[in-house]
Length: 318
Image 1 (cartoon, rainbow, N blue to C red):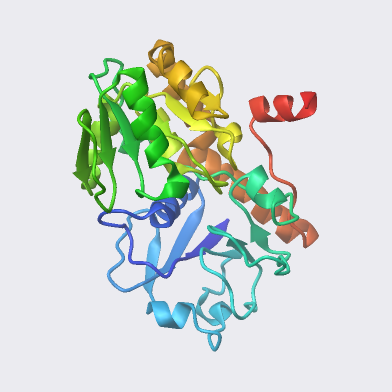
Image 2: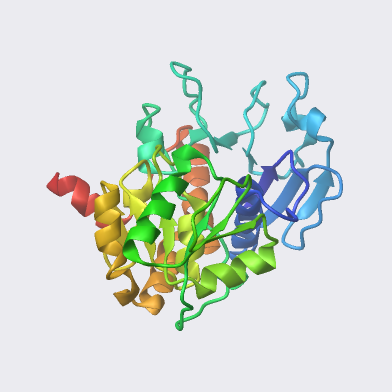
């Protein structure tokens, strides 16, 4: 199959950027599975897994642009990672990486990032994000610190992480933008480069991810699991689809998180990585998208996503 991916960013990303890294991982996954990949992306993009066609970002996202005119004639499908202001003249899917406006109609070609994300928009169509396990450092031996990685915004729950780690008696490292005032025992590292982030994820006893909003996916969660690091998190959004009792703890309150922190180190690092590799690798993501591509080309419609088995079983019990 010849798949054309479209991103209005320059790839690969040099520092942060969740969507950008997912697009790179998808291109790698598709190529590894024998598909031909063309990438429409901002000038300066370089990616071995795809034939790159450089297109200015403003052209890609303009309502005046028919993206179909940029697609090679032998391509099977176009897959965009930004909202389409003008439906293209070729078969197309769009991954919704954020939230659509309340009440906005969902295009028939929209694919969400998790079952929860899709359901909140009245859809059942989703594909889980994935990353390349080879991009992460796996460590079974952990250092004496917990980690919070993300924007220091209240919805990300960084205050819960700080208070929870203090009550649990754990040293906490915080990585992210904006520096508030901290108590002793909390070390703020600010923004770090990818190499440093990978090392911190691999060395952490656990990742605190006390989300207080409905995560569409939660990329940091699988980054930690690829590193062999278990995750302390909440039930918000997609997180129950990503985390099982074997690789972390889902908590309803801060008190729950403090109690879970006492045993979080008992999770197997190998099981954490195996779980992420099975369900959230670039290869798993690519296979799930190919399933969507084939459904659209064969029937003219997308199909429902496939939840992780643990989440499906829990949902059935409930």
